[in-house]
Length: 329
Image (cartoon, rainbow, N blue to C red; front, side, top):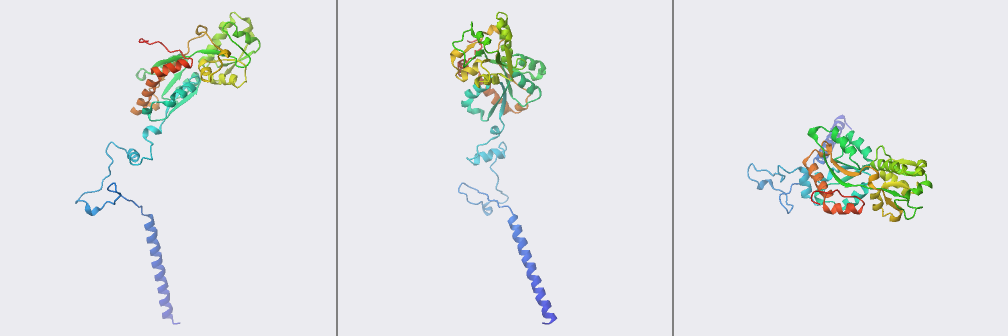
């Protein structure tokens, strides 16, 4: 084969490779282009630019007051998440109230349109979390001491809104080995069972009430001097210790006994004169990061109205709470 023929074949092969490379590049570029279909009407017919008047463009139907997220919700019935749905309202509540409020809140007002999380603990534990800027919209304490302290620590321009939901009651409970308890003889069981469950009196109002009750009884009954209180982190945990059989008896919130349908002959309600009152007190944490928008405040206002409604007050009575009297009652 001559040199001229060989050069011709080589040139032809290089040209074919060049066209092949260019073809592959064009194909790859086309694959990267986004595919966007615009529909001009409900029949899903493509918008025809030739039918538009000169200078006219196809515009989005989103109004100035409508966010892109709101438009997605409107255009697709399968998407139900809105801005209200995403961020839950977090409310800190004393442990004796959490199971009750969650049971009552199963049929909560639909106009809230967002989840509500009830975070429980002892009133003292929650108080210190709030002081550390925990993101709670409101705080429900089992006594007024922590509420008063929060009020004192809050600047006047951020005045806290407070009100009493109900008054809790302390009970003595001995579920397995006691029968027909009475207020005049229940302490006889202290001779048999020296260890008794109570909430920690330093951080839990029901523990403080139990401590006061023991001091009251100790004035008349020397048998109490051998009693050994075991302090749980909160009132719910004190209840659990007795309920699970870790301890035979304890001082617990009456509301938890009512909630769990405890046998009435196995517990007694402690007279309120034996300890300080247990007001279940609501506090709106006005300086909370949870209350930065108007929608946050409106949702919380709905919850407050629900909690103070006549229907809820009647149900709280059934759980052993005492409802405070109002000027109209």
